[in-house]
Length: 536
Image 1 (cartoon, one colour):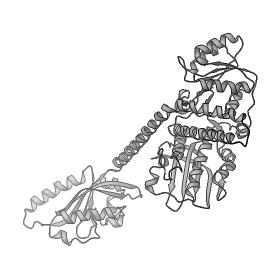
Image 2: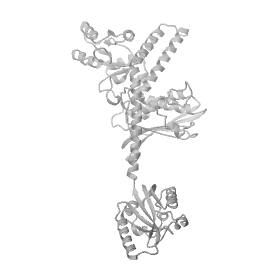
Image 3: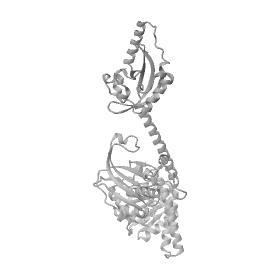
């Protein structure tokens, strides 16, 4: 596929046209050449060196580019628009000019219908009947290149998965013990605040201890979310309602100098997600957008529905063919360069100054989206802001009503019997005091064997088992199973500093399992206990 737009004078000196040869031998050689040319497995074509006009092509050439032979002969590659990139044409010509041939030059071609093809091009200048021609052999390598791209994508996904698994192991290794300690700090700080007069320095000091413990808890929670080790309790819900319920809090979070708008798509189909995870996504994306805006600015949230086909899903990890609800967050901030965008979902990667960020916000969003079988796209340009688009699969089912008011209301207690099993003495004592203050009759045990004895000595029905999952000799789930045989009406609530001790595949709670993550404050514990006892 010769470039007829370039001069060929420098080639003429290199070509020796035979002037004295046996005509019969030449004719026989040319016939053999023609037979090989026409029946070749690769696409072949021949153009005159002087003007670049096609004089011959084989059947594979017709199949590759979609032009019948009679439309090819007498025309040029420019007239047929066979090259998708003129640089490929120039590169092939430069090789012919220098060496009289080129080998395996990659070219991006275009078929008659406009479909792109990737080809490996080899060309040589040969005399045909005393006239210099360029013979081209063109191999279609489109499938091979796409396979290589897919392998590269899979390799990148594997490396990302391995990185996430490493972070998950790291987080899991410290989460249980670390969150146990934070539970004790938060619980005792809560109880101490009840006995200290507001406005005193001691009260202020205790509040700071409480805040520091909660921030520490958030770090571990974000690590577990990124690694998809966070326990989730999915509900079928309307994403529009979830976003609407967060707008007031988000506006307080980002400040009055930044305008926050929301454009919901009407009649949005439901999704199945943990409502708390949606809150995490919105907070992290909006905080990230706020930090990218210098001075006044704008954040726009919108929802939409999108049907994903094979072409759209190709090359997007976690995205498969089907219907999705999209959540899009756009900001008017400083934007990002490509080299920054390549790392934004990595844990601990941040462009903020020391003390301004942990580098876990976007990593958390990434982990949550993948945990929910979705995908996240990012588009950004320096000086032109950033847009994050999240894809979450559509779910068919009834929508669970908004739970925000219930979650925020002050939990009440009760007079039921609660068997509390916790092997950490400080947490056992603290939790027993919290439950007793709420009016419950508490049986406290530091091990499964103590729990069996306490239940036996109690002699009456046990309404709720509240047990850590990780216990000596027997895990909390097994303890609950055995006690359930003796007390069929008993409800169970499990707690742990590391949610993978209790969750099922992909971080989703097993059906019928109630779980509360350590550390939690008094109100969260009281609300969860009441919820399980009431069966709500």
